[in-house]
Length: 569
Image (cartoon, rainbow, N blue to C red; front, side, top):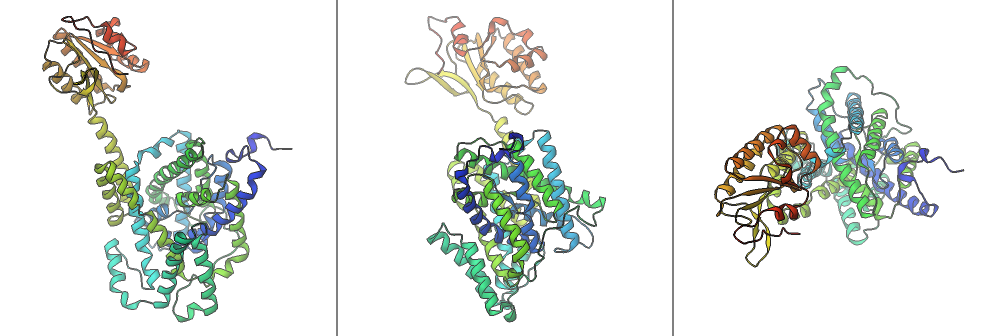
């Protein structure tokens, strides 16, 4: 008997048995890539290696059962791991050390708070917040994270001590410490990078990361790599993760990690929503971002309750799942099972894995985050936004990931405000080759003798209201013929705030004092309700409100024997 529909996960409704074989193969392939990848992310989050495995155990299970996306893969992620480490390091908690039980507990607390924020966002239907990071800003942010992540792996690849301080100090530390270079360590790190790139180039369907990890682990075990100075990850705690609230947490710790949790929240929303939408569109599905937020919230709550760090929707792992033709979250459930088997039975085999191998895996991930092609596309199509992307990337690298996410949000919002502030103002005007079309509103442009059809391509609000007023006055005062009708095409105006309402009242008075009729064309019902509340409709004749621009223009009295222009289709 099939389960009731309400009990079937959203992402697996309508599942076909014929998909099972492909999902099983996709899940095993994804596990082979995801397991070394998330183990490598622990070097960014500065947590024990086993916590990486925990990020794809219960969190991935929670999202598979509660999320909407059929393909989105949730787990440890380089961007959120970098935000987490930077946030905790700057939280000012006395005596806090990376890798320590207190550090791991605070990572879990941050994941719990991130999960709660995501849940609140779902209740308030705030999925749209993911749209407040523009594509160019996100490219710049992830490029900066990629530079930070890749450069952060160089000391482990070279076998030299890591530096402290800002990014420049850390780079200078390994450059000046190159004299301590461990050639065997470099061989493992460089070998990992070479194997991954060779497989990408020659055998792209085979995951080079797992080939590198398994092959070099075998070499390290057979040759006892640690005996000739190669740092290995050592014993990994096997078995199930610890279940429960993070230990030793105080109320003061909650306040200390909230800013980091909010930064993680915005990246989780933006990155997961973008990934989910892009793959849904690719397969003709509909992305339910608000439902995915439920799954992401549950995933982070599961992470916090199972001793690991913040999880996120991963574009790279989702691309892998799609590339091997995974159809549903059943593939992710296979990853969960494989990870569980590793935790229960295989952690002992990983003891001799060189840290340089994991560093090489993460180095490649960081390099792939540096989106040179994306920056080039932005440069060609929107050069102005390239500057924003580069500033965001440099801020992430030089100042830190936390500052980068704040700047990314601020720049995205400023970009929106500037576009509204500098909205286009147009006038329906005759073309040189005949006919009419909208042209830039400039002094001396009119639609016909006595008529101006004016369009403003933005909602009116306090910042652009004075610009709207100035443009109206400019085209009216400089019109070649005395204006009798001023038709406001309301296509681009759906709302008017209180400040703009005052400005619109002033424009109305200005027009009426010059004997000009203000006519509204194509206003939405909500806009008319707003204008009534501002008592503006008392100043406009009901006969001068048209639901169609053609009707509005046709109602203008003929002047000097000329017919009014026909609006463009």
